[in-house]
Image (cartoon, rainbow, N blue to C red):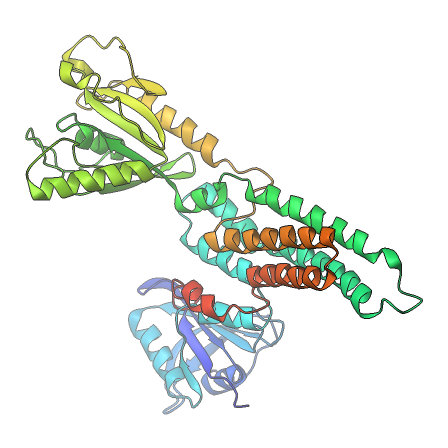
Length: 447
C-alpha cells in the first residue's frame, strides 16, 4: 500500500505570537528535519537549529527542533516539531518550505488526533475528551474533560467488553463442544451471572440524570414572563454589560438572546426571551413562540414579573417542565414584601434598576447549578453517543438474560455479541467510520 502523506500544521495560536509551534507527522518527518535543519536530533531532546529554505538554503529562522520517532510519538508515526519565533512571515515561510517537499501537505482539522486514534494511541472516548478539553470554558468542564482524556470511560468500557467476551466464550463452548467430556455442563449459569452483573453496573452509570452532558453543554436558565417586566434589564445586570436592548415599549425583545456565564466554575447560559402575551403582530408572535419553546427546554425558568403591576403578580401561574422561580422585579417601586407565589418553587425580589436583591439571586442560581452539575464518582457519560452505545449494550444484555431463561443458547450468544459490539463502538474498536467525520470536524487545525 502507498505510504500516507506527511502532514504539517501550525499547532500554536495564530501569529503574531511569542512562539510558533509547527508540527510534522508521517513517514517523511525525518526527511523534513534533514532537509530544513540538516540533521535529526536525538529523540525527545530539543536542540537549537537554523531552519533553511530547501531551495536556496536561505536561513528562515532559528529555533528549537525536536524528533519523536514512531510508534512512541503522540500520533504513533514519526513526528517532528519546530518551535520558532511567532511572526507571520516566519510562520508563512516555514509552512511554504514544508509544502514544497514531495509527499507533504497541510493537515486537515483534527488530523493529528485522528492519526493517533487510527494508530491506537487514543481510543474514541479519549479523542472526545481531548476535544472537550480544548473547548472547555469553565473549571468544572476542564476537570471532566481531563478525566475523559485520561481514559476513565474508555478503560471501564474495555473492561466491560472483555467480560462480555468471556461470557460469550462460555456460551459458545457450551454450544460447539457440548459433546466433549472436558466441557463443563454448568457454563450457562456463570455466563448469565456475568451478563446480569454487567447489566446492573452499566444501568447504574446511565442513571446519572445526564450530569455529564449537562456539564459539558452548560445549564440553560430562561428569563420568561410578560412584556415590560424588566427581563432584558435583568439580563444586562447579570451579564454586567449591555447584552440586550432595553426600551419602555412592550415587545422590544423579539428573538432569543443568550449570555454565557461561569458560576464558580460551572457553565450557565442565561436566555432572555420575548415577553409572553397575546398579540396580532406576526413577528412578535414568532418571538413568543420561540420564548415558550426555549423556556420549555430550559433547566430552570425565572418567571419575571413587574411587582408594581397588580395584573402581573399572579401571571406566573404557568407550568413548565423545568423548575420555576418567580422573580419579582422593580421592587424599588413598592414595598418589597413577598406575596403568594403560585406554582413557583422559589420567590425572589429584585430591582434590575438599583441592583437590590441581585447578589442573592445570583447566589441562588449558583447553588442550583452546583447541585445540578456536581458530578459524582458514577458519572462517566459526557455525550449522547456514549449514552446511546451503553443503552444499546444494556438492551442487548436484557435480551440475553431473557433468552438464557428460555434455554435458547444460540440467540443468547448473538445478544452477547451485540453487547460486545456496542461497547466496541463506544471506544472505536469496531464499526465507527460513520461517526469519525462528525467527531473530528470540530477540531482545530494542528490538533
